[in-house]
Length: 412
Image (cartoon, rainbow, N blue to C red; front, side):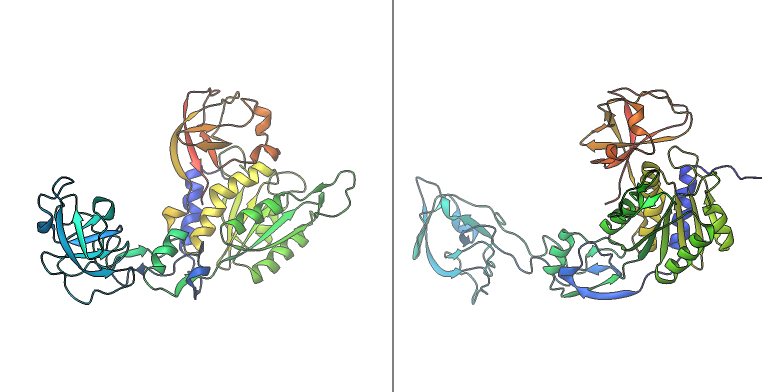
């Protein structure tokens, strides 16, 4: 007897747990400048306070605040200038009371100085400076460790590194950092109707869009990809999957997963003695999707309909693959927010339904101005520019502009 389809949350939990149980990828040390998008293989911590000294945030004069008392435009305070400091200089001596230090942005404050007056509030004197404003202690000072303190975690293990991470790590003097080796994913589009890009078109044939799209999304998230397509031949499909798994860490297929006469993927998984994690999700689109495990590697079998394949890739395959690649779980799954619709959808939803959409600020737009036909699982063009899914719970009626809906934003 066929088992009932599992709920979306159950399917996601199943594949995340399976991915987390796999051994983490090998660790490699790479140059910091090459690490954008890579996954930290251990906690990356601050080696020193940043900034490493009290410094000036502006061009002006370093002073003892007590020496500025009463200074104003009509009654300036005059002080001798006893030193000049540029960024990169190390003060040779402390600043005596009753004296000023000419200082530039980024330069360290000399010992004793507890404030900086911007040059616009002075006469700009080089030997003697006239101060036109009084300052309080610690005014206009960037303190040692104000940005980050030594020992603080900059990027926890499992973090996908961004340019901002790299900038902070560069400020700590990191030259190389440990990251996980990128997973290699095999992308296999199945279907005797498929043509490779560049092949001459023939009646009844279509070009492989799923393979290209799925591979591109995987590469966008840092995976190495091997892409192929093959005909509806169960022995050939099984052989291709086995070959791919010999070189890859996981395989993502599209097509042949439903109940048609040439939907061979369930049979292929059985032939390969793969352990089925789930077979079918109670949602539209993408309900026939299956996930399996074979020899410690993951297999995801997606629908051949382009949007169904894209939606379930985002919902289940990518989170699991990112988790297997070493990312922290919180960075693997689609974030949920509530947003206001600016367009509607005209169909009722008997079961849980997911619609492609474009989120911006606190609003979300469903393409097609309410035309349900745009949301056919086979529609490709309506996906352009979409960055999220709108979730409509089972039993929902048509939705209208102004209603608030659950939005699942794609992983970045």
